[in-house]
Amino acid sequence: MAHDAQAAPAGTTKLVIRNIGLVLSGLLERPILDADTIVAVNGRITAVGRAKDVDTDGATSIVDAHGVAVAPGLIDSHVHPVAGDWTPRQSQLNWIDSSMHGGVTTMVSAGEVHMPGRPRDIVGLKAMAITAQRTYSSFRSGGVKLHAGAPVIEQGMVEDDFRDLAEAGVTLLGEIGLGGVKDGPTGHKMVAWARKYGIQSTIHTGGPSIPGSGLIDKDVVLECDADVVGHINGGHTALPNDQIRCICEGCRRGLELVHNGNERAALFTLRTARELNQLDRVILGTDGPAGSGVQPLGIVRMIAMLSSLGDVPAETAFCFATGNTARLRKLDCGIIEPGRAADFVFMDRAQHSAGKTLLESVALGDLPGIGMVVIDGVVRAGRSRNTPPATAIPEQVL
Image (cartoon, rainbow, N blue to C red):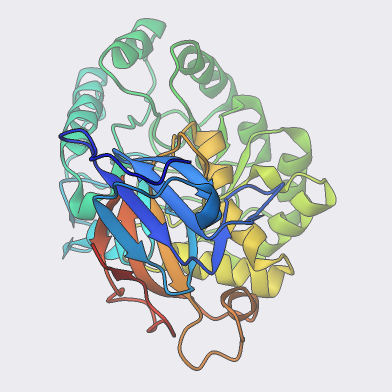
């Protein structure tokens, strides 16, 4: 590598993160990397490795990690946005920004279902989905990337409706079962149309969560064959164990565990996925905002719960909220490797945790202390206002 650095071209940004104590990759097959330095140019990772082996010259920003851990920015696979950073369900502001302080850098909408007077007619639901896709593409509270515009399908939709949505930029369906489509045959037909036009689908699983929704059991889930089994641990009410096992064994789709679901069912699903040697299917969400409110620390709480009570290494549990979700959701973030978005969360053990390291503390059930969040190579937050204080924190020195 050249060390007689030339000035970066005008407009080029180069972030160098040095003195990292632990790099969590987000990849199940190799969750910990042998690295202490990360370089990102124009918001994308260009190098990961030891300082002596990577080009750190010409940096426009430098973060000294001071020995803390760096992981990919966390992904919340299941949120319900409405308008900007406000949710009418709880009349609460700044829930997205607060989640960023919990390490979340990317969110995926499971439907804008809490919109007051949500339209149920086909013209209206398509218009609302396109509006949400446009507005959240242009609005990023705290820098968080929120993939929105997820229509809840209704009876009477035809193939052309899905083609129209895709041509308008819609890439997601809201939870199947929150609207008028609650049966397997209709759901299967519409999921196939969506998939044909590159639209990813999620199905509600378990008992009803909002007025108009209903029970979606294993038979409907398996027949619909949606890309993601939404909150398989219930949102809030979970299916019986035998039905959860049947879903796990009967398909190869994503198994989404959410904070606002049944914790016992989440642990049962995790054990079943591990027995099947299919931990790569496990992804995490909050299912908020919802009746139980907003959970800014919902994803890190899920990581700590699954590691401490589900007997998986903490570095593996972090993969559920990063690389696994990125792969299943076809996102360009969630993994620390060249070419990916430069989204990072800096963490250390919380002060006075019984664990001696970050990973040990999480495995004991303690939340990590977040010291910095970076999105697209830009520092968006320093020490989190929501997590317990970290023992050590990084510092932006340039």
